Length: 132
Image 1 (cartoon, rainbow, N blue to C red):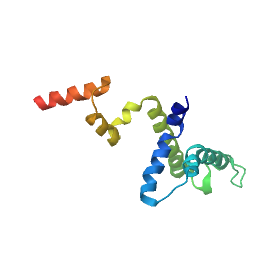
Image 2: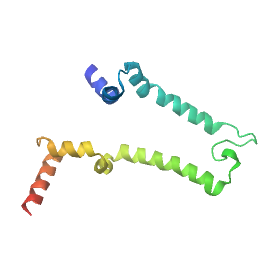
Image 3: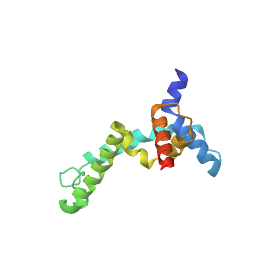
Image 4: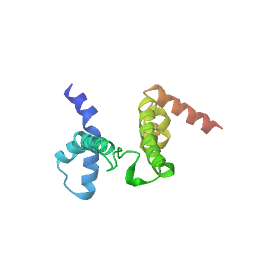
C-alpha cells in the first residue's frame, strides 16, 4: 500500500525533482512536496479570494477587473479560464484525446514489448504500414 500511495501521490514530482536537480544542482525533497501538495491549494485559495474581492464600487473583482469594459476584455479573460478548466476536465475524462501530444508516451509505445492490447495494436499497425 505504501508503494502504491507513493506512486500515486509523489512519484511524478520526485522524478521531476531528480531531473531538475541534474541541471540546477541540489533541490530538497521539501520543495517537491510543497510543489505537489501545498502550493496548488494556496493558489486555489488566492484565486477564490481574488474572485470574491470587492473592486471598490461594490461589485466582485471577477468579471469587473480594473473598470475595463465587459466586451471584449472581461469576456476574453473569463473565456481563458473556462478554456483552461475545460481542457483539464476533458483530459481527466478522456485522456486518449491528448496522447498525440505526449511524445514520451508515443516513444514508449513504439519501444516496448507488446504486453497490453494498446501496445499490440500499435505494433500491428506499424507492421501493416511496413508491408505497404
